[in-house]
Length: 333
Ligand code: SAM
Image (cartoon, rainbow, N blue to C red; front, side, top):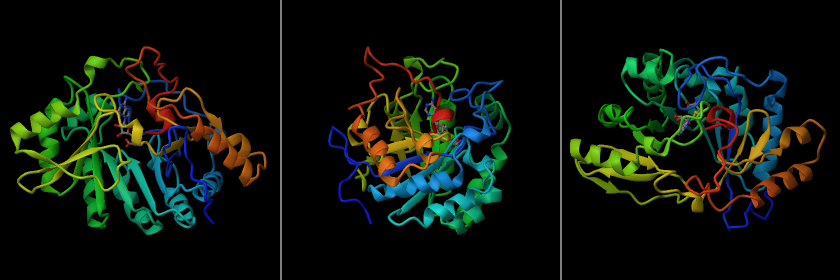
Protein backbone atom coordinates (compact mmCIF):
# COMPACT_ATOMS: atom_id res chain seq x y z
CA UNK A 1 0.00 0.00 0.00
CA UNK A 2 2.80 2.42 0.90
CA UNK A 3 4.32 4.31 -1.99
CA UNK A 4 7.93 3.13 -2.32
CA UNK A 5 9.25 6.68 -2.77
CA UNK A 6 9.62 8.24 0.68
CA UNK A 7 8.78 11.84 1.47
CA UNK A 8 12.30 13.13 1.12
CA UNK A 9 13.31 16.76 1.00
CA UNK A 10 16.14 18.41 -0.90
CA UNK A 11 18.40 18.02 2.17
CA UNK A 12 17.91 14.25 2.30
CA UNK A 13 15.56 14.19 5.30
CA UNK A 14 12.87 11.53 5.17
CA UNK A 15 9.54 12.66 6.57
CA UNK A 16 7.50 10.18 8.60
CA UNK A 17 5.68 12.35 11.10
CA UNK A 18 2.59 14.53 10.67
CA UNK A 19 1.29 16.99 13.26
CA UNK A 20 -2.39 17.65 12.86
CA UNK A 21 -3.91 20.71 14.45
CA UNK A 22 -7.63 20.20 14.88
CA UNK A 23 -8.54 23.60 16.27
CA UNK A 24 -7.09 27.03 16.94
CA UNK A 25 -9.36 27.46 19.98
CA UNK A 26 -8.04 27.05 23.47
CA UNK A 27 -9.44 27.11 26.99
CA UNK A 28 -6.43 28.96 28.44
CA UNK A 29 -4.51 32.02 27.18
CA UNK A 30 -0.79 31.46 27.70
CA UNK A 31 0.98 34.78 27.17
CA UNK A 32 3.79 33.12 25.21
CA UNK A 33 1.31 31.78 22.66
CA UNK A 34 -2.01 33.65 22.53
CA UNK A 35 -3.30 37.19 22.92
CA UNK A 36 -5.05 37.92 26.22
CA UNK A 37 -8.29 39.23 24.70
CA UNK A 38 -10.25 39.39 21.48
CA UNK A 39 -8.67 36.34 19.92
CA UNK A 40 -9.75 35.97 16.32
CA UNK A 41 -10.46 32.32 15.78
CA UNK A 42 -11.02 30.87 12.34
CA UNK A 43 -14.69 30.49 11.45
CA UNK A 44 -15.89 26.93 11.93
CA UNK A 45 -16.55 26.35 8.24
CA UNK A 46 -12.85 26.89 7.52
CA UNK A 47 -11.77 24.17 9.93
CA UNK A 48 -11.20 20.74 8.42
CA UNK A 49 -13.85 18.18 9.29
CA UNK A 50 -12.79 14.86 10.80
CA UNK A 51 -13.58 13.21 7.44
CA UNK A 52 -11.22 15.63 5.68
CA UNK A 53 -8.48 15.06 8.25
CA UNK A 54 -8.88 11.31 7.89
CA UNK A 55 -8.62 11.54 4.10
CA UNK A 56 -5.51 13.71 4.29
CA UNK A 57 -3.87 11.40 6.84
CA UNK A 58 -4.63 8.37 4.65
CA UNK A 59 -2.86 9.92 1.70
CA UNK A 60 0.06 10.93 3.92
CA UNK A 61 0.27 7.38 5.26
CA UNK A 62 0.52 6.11 1.69
CA UNK A 63 3.64 8.29 1.38
CA UNK A 64 5.34 6.85 4.44
CA UNK A 65 3.94 8.97 7.26
CA UNK A 66 3.59 6.53 10.15
CA UNK A 67 3.33 8.79 13.20
CA UNK A 68 0.59 11.27 13.93
CA UNK A 69 0.37 13.87 16.66
CA UNK A 70 -2.88 15.70 17.35
CA UNK A 71 -2.51 19.22 18.59
CA UNK A 72 -4.03 22.70 18.47
CA UNK A 73 -5.04 25.23 19.99
CA UNK A 74 -6.31 22.85 22.59
CA UNK A 75 -7.46 19.63 20.90
CA UNK A 76 -9.66 18.57 23.81
CA UNK A 77 -11.99 21.53 23.28
CA UNK A 78 -13.11 20.08 19.97
CA UNK A 79 -16.08 17.70 20.19
CA UNK A 80 -15.61 13.95 19.91
CA UNK A 81 -11.84 13.84 19.51
CA UNK A 82 -12.10 10.14 20.36
CA UNK A 83 -14.09 9.71 17.14
CA UNK A 84 -11.21 11.17 15.13
CA UNK A 85 -8.63 9.03 16.95
CA UNK A 86 -10.68 5.97 16.10
CA UNK A 87 -10.71 6.90 12.41
CA UNK A 88 -6.98 7.62 12.37
CA UNK A 89 -6.16 4.39 14.20
CA UNK A 90 -7.83 2.46 11.40
CA UNK A 91 -5.52 3.88 8.71
CA UNK A 92 -3.04 1.30 7.47
CA UNK A 93 0.58 2.23 8.08
CA UNK A 94 -0.06 4.49 11.08
CA UNK A 95 1.92 2.99 13.98
CA UNK A 96 1.69 5.72 16.53
CA UNK A 97 -0.90 8.32 17.51
CA UNK A 98 -0.03 10.90 20.14
CA UNK A 99 -1.80 13.92 21.60
CA UNK A 100 -0.44 17.22 22.88
CA UNK A 101 -2.79 18.80 25.40
CA UNK A 102 -2.84 21.32 28.21
CA UNK A 103 -4.58 18.64 30.26
CA UNK A 104 -7.40 20.82 31.61
CA UNK A 105 -10.10 18.56 30.12
CA UNK A 106 -8.08 15.36 30.17
CA UNK A 107 -9.49 13.65 33.26
CA UNK A 108 -12.95 13.47 31.69
CA UNK A 109 -11.79 12.41 28.21
CA UNK A 110 -8.78 10.19 28.83
CA UNK A 111 -10.66 6.88 28.96
CA UNK A 112 -12.52 7.49 25.68
CA UNK A 113 -9.28 8.56 23.98
CA UNK A 114 -7.44 5.47 25.16
CA UNK A 115 -10.26 3.19 24.05
CA UNK A 116 -10.22 4.90 20.65
CA UNK A 117 -6.56 4.01 20.13
CA UNK A 118 -4.57 6.98 21.44
CA UNK A 119 -1.14 5.70 22.42
CA UNK A 120 0.85 8.57 23.84
CA UNK A 121 0.25 11.80 25.68
CA UNK A 122 2.28 14.99 26.01
CA UNK A 123 0.81 17.20 28.68
CA UNK A 124 1.94 20.79 28.90
CA UNK A 125 2.68 21.75 32.47
CA UNK A 126 4.78 24.84 33.10
CA UNK A 127 4.33 25.10 36.86
CA UNK A 128 2.66 23.40 39.82
CA UNK A 129 1.77 26.68 41.47
CA UNK A 130 -1.79 27.89 41.02
CA UNK A 131 -0.86 31.58 40.95
CA UNK A 132 2.02 31.11 38.52
CA UNK A 133 -0.28 29.00 36.35
CA UNK A 134 -2.68 31.94 36.31
CA UNK A 135 0.12 34.40 35.55
CA UNK A 136 1.24 32.30 32.58
CA UNK A 137 -2.10 31.15 31.23
CA UNK A 138 -4.43 33.93 32.42
CA UNK A 139 -6.82 31.23 33.59
CA UNK A 140 -7.18 28.94 36.60
CA UNK A 141 -6.93 25.21 36.09
CA UNK A 142 -3.85 23.65 37.62
CA UNK A 143 -5.91 21.20 39.73
CA UNK A 144 -7.67 19.92 36.64
CA UNK A 145 -4.36 19.43 34.84
CA UNK A 146 -2.93 17.44 37.76
CA UNK A 147 -6.14 15.38 37.92
CA UNK A 148 -5.79 14.71 34.18
CA UNK A 149 -2.22 13.50 34.61
CA UNK A 150 -3.18 11.14 37.41
CA UNK A 151 -6.20 9.85 35.52
CA UNK A 152 -4.08 9.14 32.44
CA UNK A 153 -1.58 7.23 34.56
CA UNK A 154 -4.39 5.28 36.21
CA UNK A 155 -5.70 4.28 32.79
CA UNK A 156 -2.29 2.90 31.86
CA UNK A 157 -1.05 5.36 29.25
CA UNK A 158 2.51 4.18 29.32
CA UNK A 159 4.48 7.09 27.94
CA UNK A 160 3.19 10.30 29.47
CA UNK A 161 5.45 13.27 28.98
CA UNK A 162 5.21 16.61 30.67
CA UNK A 163 6.32 19.59 28.59
CA UNK A 164 7.33 22.81 30.32
CA UNK A 165 8.20 26.02 28.57
CA UNK A 166 11.41 27.71 29.69
CA UNK A 167 11.36 31.52 29.89
CA UNK A 168 14.00 33.48 31.72
CA UNK A 169 13.02 35.29 34.93
CA UNK A 170 9.63 33.59 34.80
CA UNK A 171 9.87 29.82 34.87
CA UNK A 172 13.13 29.18 36.76
CA UNK A 173 11.15 28.84 40.00
CA UNK A 174 9.14 25.97 38.49
CA UNK A 175 12.09 23.80 37.45
CA UNK A 176 12.85 22.00 40.70
CA UNK A 177 9.20 21.47 41.77
CA UNK A 178 8.36 20.10 38.31
CA UNK A 179 11.31 17.73 38.39
CA UNK A 180 10.39 16.60 41.91
CA UNK A 181 6.84 15.92 40.74
CA UNK A 182 8.01 14.06 37.63
CA UNK A 183 10.41 11.94 39.66
CA UNK A 184 7.74 11.17 42.24
CA UNK A 185 5.20 9.99 39.68
CA UNK A 186 7.65 8.44 37.23
CA UNK A 187 6.83 10.87 34.42
CA UNK A 188 9.21 12.08 31.77
CA UNK A 189 9.70 15.83 31.89
CA UNK A 190 10.86 18.00 29.00
CA UNK A 191 11.77 21.64 28.94
CA UNK A 192 11.18 23.61 25.72
CA UNK A 193 13.03 26.82 24.96
CA UNK A 194 10.79 29.82 24.34
CA UNK A 195 10.42 30.41 20.57
CA UNK A 196 9.40 33.53 18.62
CA UNK A 197 5.86 32.25 18.09
CA UNK A 198 3.92 34.36 20.58
CA UNK A 199 0.90 36.21 19.26
CA UNK A 200 1.88 39.46 20.98
CA UNK A 201 5.29 39.60 19.28
CA UNK A 202 7.07 40.16 22.57
CA UNK A 203 9.68 37.38 22.24
CA UNK A 204 13.26 38.44 22.82
CA UNK A 205 16.38 36.33 22.46
CA UNK A 206 17.51 37.14 26.00
CA UNK A 207 14.33 35.59 27.43
CA UNK A 208 15.37 32.15 26.26
CA UNK A 209 16.23 30.01 29.25
CA UNK A 210 18.43 27.40 27.66
CA UNK A 211 18.45 23.68 28.23
CA UNK A 212 22.03 23.92 29.53
CA UNK A 213 21.01 26.48 32.15
CA UNK A 214 18.15 24.27 33.30
CA UNK A 215 20.43 21.24 33.42
CA UNK A 216 22.77 23.14 35.76
CA UNK A 217 19.88 24.04 38.06
CA UNK A 218 18.71 20.42 38.16
CA UNK A 219 22.15 19.00 38.80
CA UNK A 220 22.69 21.46 41.64
CA UNK A 221 19.40 20.40 43.24
CA UNK A 222 19.32 16.67 42.58
CA UNK A 223 22.31 14.82 41.15
CA UNK A 224 24.27 14.46 37.94
CA UNK A 225 22.31 14.04 34.71
CA UNK A 226 23.68 11.31 32.48
CA UNK A 227 23.08 11.36 28.71
CA UNK A 228 20.69 8.77 27.30
CA UNK A 229 21.24 7.35 23.84
CA UNK A 230 18.34 8.21 21.58
CA UNK A 231 16.20 5.39 20.16
CA UNK A 232 14.94 7.78 17.50
CA UNK A 233 17.34 10.43 16.20
CA UNK A 234 14.43 12.42 14.76
CA UNK A 235 12.84 13.15 18.11
CA UNK A 236 13.68 16.72 19.09
CA UNK A 237 14.79 16.28 22.71
CA UNK A 238 18.21 15.60 24.16
CA UNK A 239 17.50 13.16 26.98
CA UNK A 240 19.21 12.56 30.31
CA UNK A 241 18.59 10.31 33.29
CA UNK A 242 19.22 11.21 36.89
CA UNK A 243 22.33 9.43 38.17
CA UNK A 244 20.38 8.25 41.25
CA UNK A 245 18.17 6.20 38.93
CA UNK A 246 15.03 8.23 39.59
CA UNK A 247 13.64 9.65 36.40
CA UNK A 248 14.47 11.20 33.06
CA UNK A 249 14.63 14.73 31.75
CA UNK A 250 14.64 15.99 28.18
CA UNK A 251 15.58 19.33 26.69
CA UNK A 252 14.09 20.66 23.48
CA UNK A 253 16.53 23.38 22.51
CA UNK A 254 15.44 24.91 19.20
CA UNK A 255 17.43 28.06 19.95
CA UNK A 256 20.59 26.87 21.68
CA UNK A 257 20.93 23.51 19.87
CA UNK A 258 18.69 23.47 16.78
CA UNK A 259 17.73 19.99 15.62
CA UNK A 260 16.54 20.85 12.09
CA UNK A 261 19.06 18.48 10.50
CA UNK A 262 17.05 15.55 11.87
CA UNK A 263 13.59 17.01 11.35
CA UNK A 264 11.12 14.49 9.94
CA UNK A 265 7.93 16.48 10.53
CA UNK A 266 5.29 18.21 8.50
CA UNK A 267 2.24 19.96 9.91
CA UNK A 268 -1.27 20.70 8.86
CA UNK A 269 -3.13 23.59 10.46
CA UNK A 270 -6.72 23.33 11.65
CA UNK A 271 -7.91 25.01 8.46
CA UNK A 272 -5.98 22.66 6.24
CA UNK A 273 -2.79 24.54 5.39
CA UNK A 274 0.22 22.30 5.08
CA UNK A 275 3.53 23.55 6.50
CA UNK A 276 7.02 22.07 6.40
CA UNK A 277 8.27 23.91 9.50
CA UNK A 278 6.91 25.75 12.53
CA UNK A 279 8.68 28.78 11.09
CA UNK A 280 7.44 28.42 7.50
CA UNK A 281 6.28 31.58 5.83
CA UNK A 282 4.72 29.54 3.03
CA UNK A 283 1.77 27.18 3.25
CA UNK A 284 0.28 24.63 0.88
CA UNK A 285 -3.51 24.65 0.66
CA UNK A 286 -4.72 21.11 1.29
CA UNK A 287 -8.25 22.23 2.16
CA UNK A 288 -8.78 23.61 -1.31
CA UNK A 289 -7.95 20.19 -2.74
CA UNK A 290 -9.90 18.26 -0.12
CA UNK A 291 -13.03 20.33 -0.80
CA UNK A 292 -12.78 20.20 -4.58
CA UNK A 293 -12.77 16.50 -5.23
CA UNK A 294 -9.04 16.32 -5.78
CA UNK A 295 -7.62 12.88 -6.36
CA UNK A 296 -5.19 11.19 -3.99
CA UNK A 297 -2.47 11.81 -6.57
CA UNK A 298 -3.16 15.54 -6.47
CA UNK A 299 -2.91 15.53 -2.69
CA UNK A 300 0.29 13.55 -2.97
CA UNK A 301 1.76 16.16 -5.32
CA UNK A 302 0.89 18.89 -2.83
CA UNK A 303 2.52 17.02 0.06
CA UNK A 304 5.65 16.28 -1.96
CA UNK A 305 5.91 19.86 -3.10
CA UNK A 306 5.68 21.09 0.53
CA UNK A 307 8.34 18.63 1.71
CA UNK A 308 10.65 19.37 -1.24
CA UNK A 309 10.63 23.08 -0.44
CA UNK A 310 11.71 22.68 3.16
CA UNK A 311 14.59 24.92 4.23
CA UNK A 312 17.68 23.37 5.76
CA UNK A 313 16.99 25.10 9.09
CA UNK A 314 14.56 27.45 10.81
CA UNK A 315 17.16 30.20 10.76
CA UNK A 316 15.90 32.02 13.86
CA UNK A 317 19.35 33.43 14.51
CA UNK A 318 20.06 34.43 10.90
CA UNK A 319 19.79 38.00 9.63
CA UNK A 320 17.21 36.92 7.08
CA UNK A 321 14.82 35.34 9.62
CA UNK A 322 11.22 36.37 9.15
CA UNK A 323 8.87 35.58 12.01
CA UNK A 324 5.82 33.68 10.78
CA UNK A 325 2.60 35.68 10.65
CA UNK A 326 0.91 33.08 12.75
CA UNK A 327 1.38 32.32 16.43
CA UNK A 328 1.83 28.84 17.87
CA UNK A 329 -1.87 28.26 18.61
CA UNK A 330 -2.70 29.04 14.96
CA UNK A 331 -0.08 26.66 13.61
CA UNK A 332 -0.35 23.78 16.03
CA UNK A 333 2.42 23.27 18.55
N1 SAM B 1 -2.95 23.19 23.86
C1 SAM B 1 -2.02 22.10 23.74
C2 SAM B 1 -0.96 22.18 24.80
O1 SAM B 1 -0.98 23.13 25.60
O2 SAM B 1 -0.13 21.30 24.85
C3 SAM B 1 -1.42 21.95 22.37
C4 SAM B 1 -0.99 23.18 21.64
S1 SAM B 1 0.27 24.12 22.47
C5 SAM B 1 0.49 25.38 21.27
C6 SAM B 1 1.66 23.02 22.27
C7 SAM B 1 2.90 23.39 23.01
O3 SAM B 1 3.44 24.55 22.44
C8 SAM B 1 2.74 23.66 24.50
O4 SAM B 1 3.56 22.77 25.22
C9 SAM B 1 3.21 25.07 24.64
O5 SAM B 1 3.91 25.29 25.84
C10 SAM B 1 4.12 25.23 23.46
N2 SAM B 1 4.32 26.63 23.06
C11 SAM B 1 3.39 27.55 22.78
N3 SAM B 1 3.95 28.73 22.46
C12 SAM B 1 5.28 28.53 22.52
C13 SAM B 1 6.41 29.36 22.28
N4 SAM B 1 6.28 30.64 21.92
N5 SAM B 1 7.64 28.82 22.43
C14 SAM B 1 7.79 27.53 22.79
N6 SAM B 1 6.77 26.68 23.02
C15 SAM B 1 5.52 27.19 22.89
